[in-house]
Image (cartoon, rainbow over all chains, first blue to last red; front, top):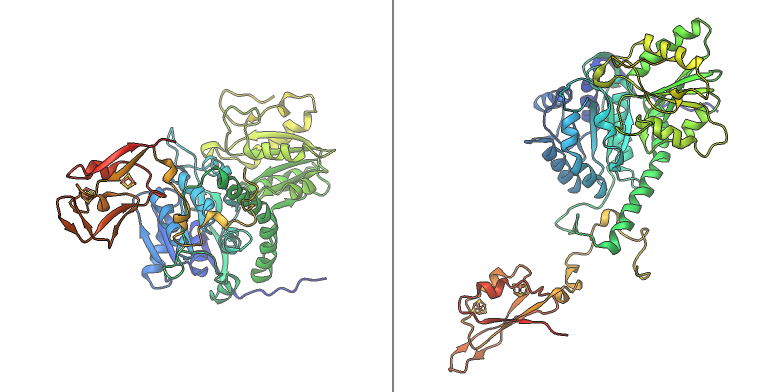
Length: 405
Length: 106
Ligand code: SF4
Ligand code: SF4
């Protein structure tokens, strides 16, 4: 049965992903924004502050002295019942780390955009996903977008997921620093924010209210703490269902469909790649090139990182002979050092049939991954069978002095 | 662990305490190693202990008291031993050493 599409009227603008974030935050009717500037996040806040100054957006913008304070400020505002937003990258996200756990532990629906960037030292202002991957265990629902359009849509969706009474967890939206944050693409945004705001109803939740006093963030002795952490486990697992539900509703509203794992030319593919973020566009081009030469290759993209969509991933990649997972972050000291690759291997552990899974590290510090890299990687793995050491540990693609044979 | 305690399902999300002022139910008196005891005769009712007590467990009662020297005070100070943690701050702050600090014995 055809789904009825209740598509809202939209206008097409040329926006960077950072600007798309700002428009989404405006349309979501956010009350409080706090931020500290860091490359490549800065233009998110520039745009938001411009909108507030121009009277296009009715929100408090709190200028703080660090990212630790930025997240603390929105945690406080969220505790008081406000709809809140912040954004950061790289070292800023690291400095927020303590408060990441506090936002989720207090079950506050904070939404944060993270144009991802490599970590110091040495200093790199360029892109990879080391910052975002370091937040894996902070109990934030984490989505990774691959276009500016998806960034706009996902930030809107994030508020609904975060504020869902079954979830009440913070949500992070990652996307490639620079390659997306500062690159202009056509983006459709709602012509008027009214319908977006209907999509994001203000829901009642426990908050700091002098008329109904509550205490948040108490010291919690051993006989209480574990149960509260288990509540987070349950909410995180539940979030998989809620994200999918929200994807559907968002599709009906904006006419664009998203899934936790998206694929391209996967049906009859023998070799498949799994990536995340903006590099998916490059990958899809590479697949077209390889297909035109008769190679049965396909692409998959992880859009939902936490909770990890095990079943979606397995369902969409199980018929492959080989699955090459390309990570742009390193878990130092792990034999499989790609965070997503590790997760994929663990997802397949209980399956009877699994493709041969390869972990490739690439794109570190924005060592740009080109179409040609995907073609060459496909050629390498096409020749390699189960016995090859290339499946036993991560390969570091593109490092001078490392040869992959 | 105590099986009488609520499970994860019953606890408010994030460990929020929904009932204001329920800390009185948490008796912290058994943390004490030393017990402050006010010598009502020596006490000059300056109320410094009342100000300094971090737990607010020194109460000023509307109870007149006449000392052995015949001086009458309008109030008596009493310590709530269910919640006094025995930190000794009142002992330290009392300007006339009117609070004894006595080791708790079982
Ligand atoms: S010992 Fe500490 S807690 Fe007890 S009454 Fe004195 S100041 Fe208060
Ligand atoms: S500080 Fe000493 S003198 Fe002053 S009220 Fe307390 S016990 Fe009495």
